[in-house]
Image (cartoon, rainbow, N blue to C red; front, side, top):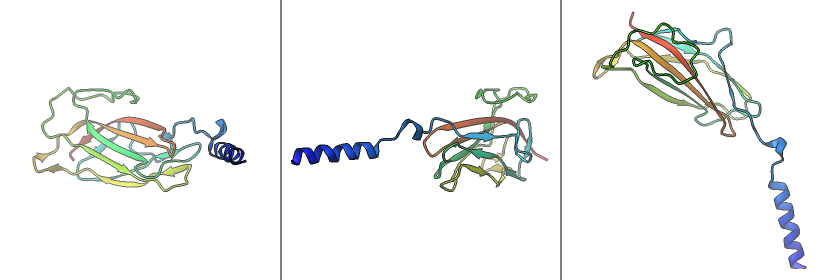
Length: 164
């Protein structure tokens, strides 16, 4: 009788804990740049020392992530490298060696339980650091979005960061 109970309990646990094929998230989240006030977009210009509002629409078919759900990575593109997500090169400046390039890498949370999330994040790019003024020119604004199931999407945007 104990063996029969054990098999029955094992059967219940197995059936309750298994996901059906319909329950499995098979889609990556979406980074939507088509929103009317999305910013920055490919080929936009940002300015050192001036704030801008990072506006994008993120969505997922099941649920967006929560902790460290999206990140922004801004780095120089003085060597004209590619991440294969950019739409175009935006008339790049001539290649140059970096002297004091600006670098920004930051993770952000998204509240739990959401299928859609609109960023409204104020970002200010400083004019320099302890090594002097940052190099102006071609930069990549790279966005990574991870949903609750672990799927991720990336968008690379080519921007210019200049001094006024």
